[in-house]
Image (cartoon, rainbow, N blue to C red; front, side):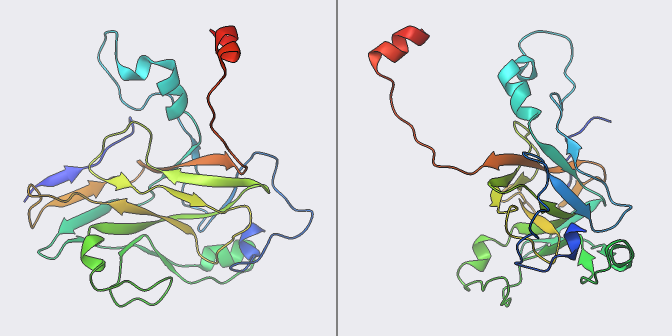
Length: 242
């Protein structure tokens, strides 16, 4: 069996019920992100960094490119609060164990009583909510796991959040990209991300994949809603810019 360690780093809103719109006159700051942690001991989102990989001396490293640095520093990183360990079984990947966080702390801080929240879980072939999974589809997503961010998220009107992998990071897992309607949709549970674990002939039963606590789990980036278009410049525009 092999051990894969995924290392990327160096070294009142919760009172709303699922699907309800925010109260009038209580919008977060323009262009900002508001969050509420499921438990006060869990990590906050942290500003993204320009550099994630410590390189030896020399010139030409990708991280030295200003546009790459700008992409890597855009948004916030969700920090993994508990070590995650997944084991490859004969049928697919499964969590070796799960951490269940009780809702008592949230009830004390916000006066609400949500369900307890596990940190990770797999798709259930017999699930009904949030959607059914067809028998022929389940084997195609058997390598995916869902991981809780333990965060309730809220953005100003007209702003959504793009959840994705860390830009330019090559890790032993991949975060599926998702656009979160955080300006109008407020679920009763924290948001989660979907991880794709390794597949292929080189993956063997008994393999383990670990994501240490404290590692960046996924990226959150603000996206302004609007009608976007792409059109070619005329020759005058191009000549002026050139």
